[in-house]
Image (tube, rainbow, N blue to C red; front, side, top):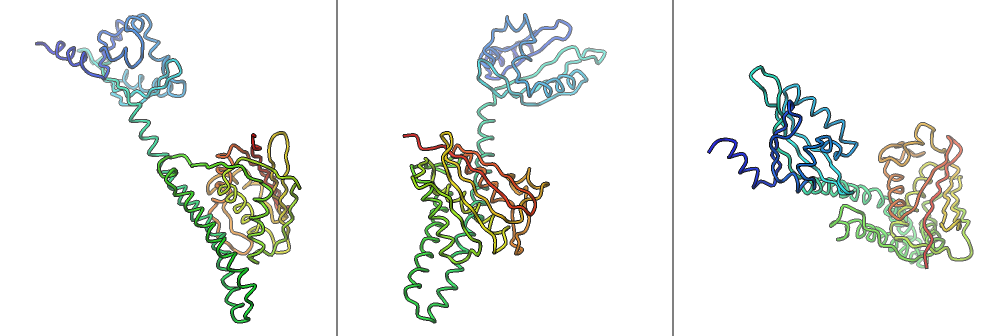
Length: 358
């Protein structure tokens, strides 16, 4: 049995495409049957127009394929992955190509192997996204627990003082705040590290029908009763319920991060205003403060992870995560967020979320 017979038998049985392309004849002198299965194209059609092979490559990958082809023609071998598309279906193809030389060391053919690695590529992408989501979850837990735990710390100090003064009624009031803060922390941990979250690279969103105005009042009341906020809150909310379909825990995270951000960059004598209204089928929440604003050079990066980090007015440490978390949580619930600000003139965030569809 000669060498060509061995290669032919391997090619007939292998799920990988074995090929040899003659540069002098401008055609494939050998192409194994797996080609038809992967490319869903007959060999005769390809032989008539070899350009179809390149045309099947998605546009973004074509420059890389051209560079690889040029390398092979110069005498180098290549081992790369490209994405092809046929009838709207994308596949990732790993191709290994070697130059074949004549006696004068001129490249006369290109031979090699191609295989469908879509499943492996998808698995790698899944693992990458999965790891990124886990890291994001841990960052969100660390970041978003700071606010509620700061309230717990503040109220604990007040309780210690009131124990000495024997103010039982106020003691019960403070205890209620501590319980709510701890419940919020527990809910956040449960939500971010839930089974649904752990089993998927996507953040699990548990939407329910709720009154946005009531949700805003509850969160603001939480800060006010904790006596840890010196800034004045102004609420401009509609009298009628503003019904939306949102994840209540994630909406609370949005509010907590916006409020915490305003507290950090607004003087104690400043004002934080939250307005909500309905406009063109959307529930709109406008969160405004009259703090120090955002410098122009930071404004384009404000929603980027660690893109706009700077210390607060009292030297509070900032990791540049809060507003990137807000952006992601708004996006996950089908909404948008924008920002307007000038240095030393305050900041306005506008959040638009879909209304409840009855």
